[in-house]
Length: 260
Image 1 (cartoon, rainbow, N blue to C red):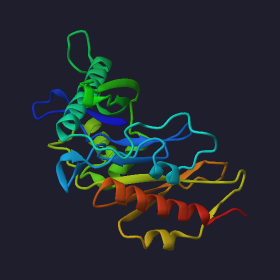
Image 2 (cartoon, rainbow, N blue to C red; image 1 turned 90 degrees about the vertical axis):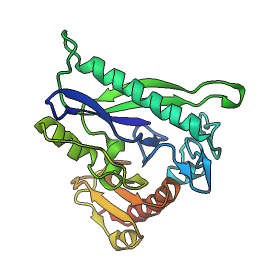
Image 3 (cartoon, rainbow, N blue to C red; image 1 turned 60 degrees about the vertical axis):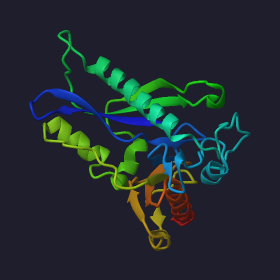
Image 4 (cartoon, helix red, strand yellow; image 1 turned 180 degrees about the horizontal axis):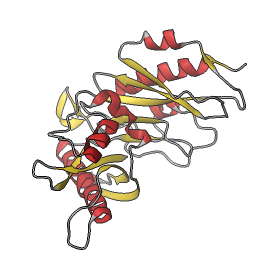
């Protein structure tokens, strides 16, 4: 998952760290394929648990991004719910780990922070066997000192996207609060053929008639196999619905790419 961690100035001009709600993502290849926010979401029909997890190797993931070879593993938490108190501890630990990494990266000899902007902090979350008392652990993987590809979902989920937060931070503008408006998902649009210039997109109408769908095409002039040509952003009543809508719209667009 990705924790979008923001270094910015407070009302006194001092650097501080703030956090977006964690962004989850899955991939079968080397690049992310689907991301969604928030990472863990309360089940409205059972307030003591989260919605079921649909991670790597889940039925939903395999529809979103069918693997070319045999899967190396599947998440043991697929289709399972997490108690809310455990989910809250996981989220707190995510902030602690990401905050520590960014603080250490920016800290000067006098202990103050030097550097502003958003940092895409990639983490692994091991939920563990909580029924037998095992505690979840969050591991740091890598960090990007810029808006993150998985964070494009914030274009529709937050009042200020990761890009808007980055610009405000580096310009020293106020960021009073980072607010998550709605669950959402992002799904890549991939080219399937190589070396075609000026590809066309014929299924935009069909994709955009799905409620809650937004489209960002990157304007890339030439294709190669599995090049990311754009992303579909989807809103939903929950992240599962948003992922399903984003998947349908993205696959519809991919089927309609003109290679001439």
